[in-house]
Image (cartoon, rainbow, N blue to C red; front, side):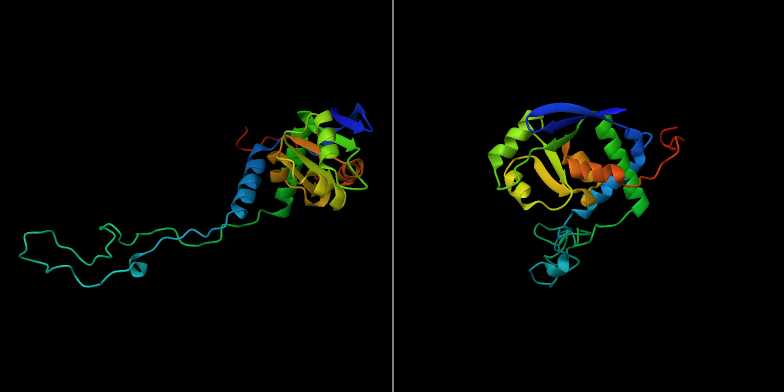
Length: 217
C-alpha cells in the first residue's frame, strides 16, 4: 500500500492507496518511448537553412577553369565559399507521431505508480472556490510542500483554480481526462482534488504481467 498525503481545511493527513491498481512496476522502456514522443510532438520544426539556390549572388563562374595557376572555382554561391549555400541543411518538417493508445496508457500508469511509490501524490480539498486568489492557492501548496513545483489535477475545468495558480512558477493545471506520462513527470508533486483522485482510481487500468521487459532482463 502506498501512502498519499491529504489536506482538508487546514489539517494534513494520510490515505492508503493500492498502487498496484495502476501497474505492478515501472516499465522503463515504455515510459521512455512515451516521453520521447511527447517531446517530439512539442517541436515546431520550423528550422531552415538556405541552399545554394536561395543564396544571393551571380551564377557566373568566377574565372576560367584552366591556366590561371589557381584552384578551379564555381560561382559565389558554392557551399565551399563564405556566404555560400548550405549542403543538406535542415528543412521545415513535422516531428510529431503517435504511439499506440494502449502504450500511452501503460506509460501513464507507470508514471502514476512511480509517483505513488515515491510519496509525491497529495489530495487537496481547500483551493479557492468562490473567487481567484493566488495568495490562498500558494498558501495551500506551501502547506503540503508543493509550492516549488506541482501539477494540479481537477475533475473538470475550474476557471477559478486556473486563475489562482497560473502566475505561480512551476505550477500547472490540467483535468484528469488529459493526464499523460509527460505531464505527470514534468513536475515533482502531483496534486489532486478529491473528485479528480476518485475519478482516477475508478478508471479501468490494464493489468500487466510481472514478466520483465527485454531491456530489463
